[in-house]
Amino acid sequence: MPTDRAPAGFIALADVAPTIRQDLRYTGSDNFVGSPLDGYRNATCVLPLPAALALSWAARVLARDGYALTALDGYRPQRAVDHMRRWAADPTDQATKARHYPRRLCT
Image (cartoon, rainbow, N blue to C red; front, side, top):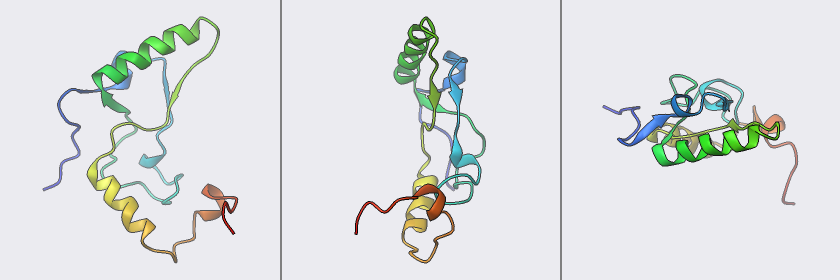
């Protein structure tokens, strides 16, 4: 049975850096796949503890000059990666291309 738990040594970013905004699109439908990714149950950024602490420090330093950080992603469960791979393997799924891939980079 797959698990969605982060490995040992990971922590919720909000536990050490509550001022960092989180915009985790993979928990909803506003992402390139067009639906919540498998394994994302809630919008909680989970990171290795050293990374979370480093971001907490950076957020404090940046706040002195009026800046703030936004986390867009963190630990990604294997089930989510598998979901992305299934989506990428289906070239007929064009529903989100216009929004998330607005320009052609290749001709």
